[in-house]
Length: 190
Image (cartoon, rainbow, N blue to C red; front, side, top):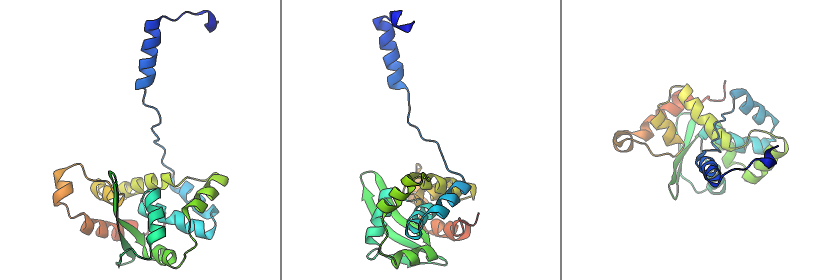
């Protein structure tokens, strides 16, 4: 039926423009708390620890790899129940100044040299579990849900603020420390 239809060049051009301007590929999926917990429960111990790093920090996959490879030489500040690791990992327009982790996660991390993001990714794919990239989305959503201001949630994830006040006058480190201790330290006790 359609093979007999004739489409004019103008119609073809119009259709191409619409297809070209159509924004596809926007991924709005955010896993539920239950899905994150199910994924953690199905992982082997070493991969569970690596996945936890992403879940409780909101860092990007590449920043997690950097953290694992350099944890022995990165400066870590022990706080009240958590550790703030100085990353200063800058690439193009992506920044990661600090990685916040509960002390118990950091201590296990620093005592284990057999951790690999590649191993975690293989297990996630084989078992059809929630990929690493969704940990970041879950963490951000959880920050907002728990009352952490957007500017501080952005700071945890290495995004720069959109306002002059946020970029130049807000003491993000002090507030990030405060909110991590008060609101996010027990993020997995859902």
